[in-house]
Length: 244
Image (cartoon, rainbow, N blue to C red):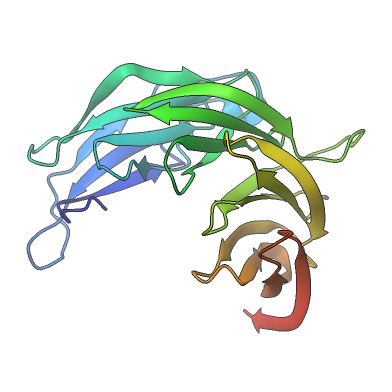
């Protein structure tokens, strides 16, 4: 949602499109939707068509970043919420991802000088310098342990509120969080890994204080609550669960 509460921006995975949905004054949604259909495909079986996986606004609300797993692109749109159709392609209109990567989730560093995207198929994470709607790749790391063979299903990514640590989840048969420190240039340095103590960590969240990390393990039907060390970034199991 933009900072003036005029539009909800939605990424549609199944249809491969991004939508801008107007918000009425009472908070309900208007039917005069701008829908932009993506086109194309890439080289992996899950890339037979566009699959939009997120829609992320820059903090100044001028740009929308839309990773498309199916086409191996991060699409970039200009945003003008004063218009009925607020989205237009930026210049450049997209950033290419290495074929087969499958960009899934995209986040900014709290200082918004850097941005990060996780690749579902390879478990890689790309690090970008960010300025004025433009992304410049500066680093790419691989989260799975060296020598791992099999499905990876890179999933979710988050940064601690203090901007010092990066976390990424891997599903399939890995079921781990990769833990990285973030240096002054925004680059990632390996710290460790943590079992999610469940199956298929589809999403996770860091609480606003930064003291706890909660993992939603989809196939084991529970949220596992970890205590987070603010100095080292490492996690310890609190023993507490939210059963679903």
